[in-house]
Image 1 (tube, rainbow, N blue to C red):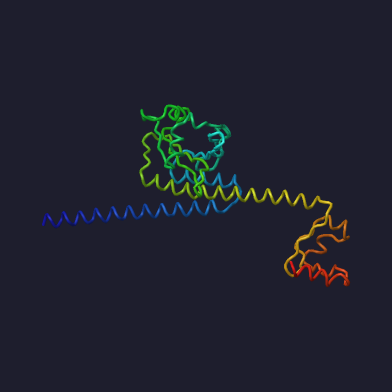
Image 2 (tube, rainbow, N blue to C red):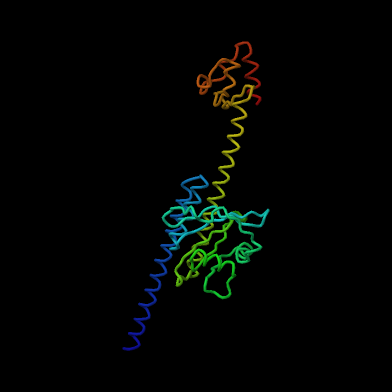
Length: 265
């Protein structure tokens, strides 16, 4: 009888543990999905940074999160975002401050190993400079997470809490790492998009301010774009021509030769 009760109790404990683990995994997947949707909803770098930092701070129940960019030329990091869970930026933060990695071996360790590190203010073995930063900010624990995309190191995310009893267990650290990987990809995509937009704006300015005529045609000859300079050359405004066939503006005697050149590509 006693043995049967013990077996039943063990089965209940095992089922309870499985339920807790399953529920925890469900919450982790929900968090990953939430962050993935949030950081994918915009391609503006500043918006991605804000969403990323607030999401990490909220999901990990921290006071705030900082995101810092790594500069391999100077071997330093610069804080580019600092947000609490509610997204209200602190204008008195150390955003923009440069930190040389030679002076901060723990950050160097994160970059070298590509692994998260937890720093506690009450840890006698912790780097004194990191402890000093924690105490100065009146925080007790800092979880450092590398930000890397496609094998390229972008920077570091740091999650701070003032709770001296806060312990980041292995599951939380693994979740933080997965979130950071998604955030790094989103930041990289936003930066690439910004670069493309910048180049497009540059070339558009060159075309629109050029003395030469310029037009973009579809494969069937439909005008997709006409530079403003064409008005001076042809007398037509872009809005009068775009969407129409360019061939209707060619002199009939020249049209066969133009069509041949166009078809030959």
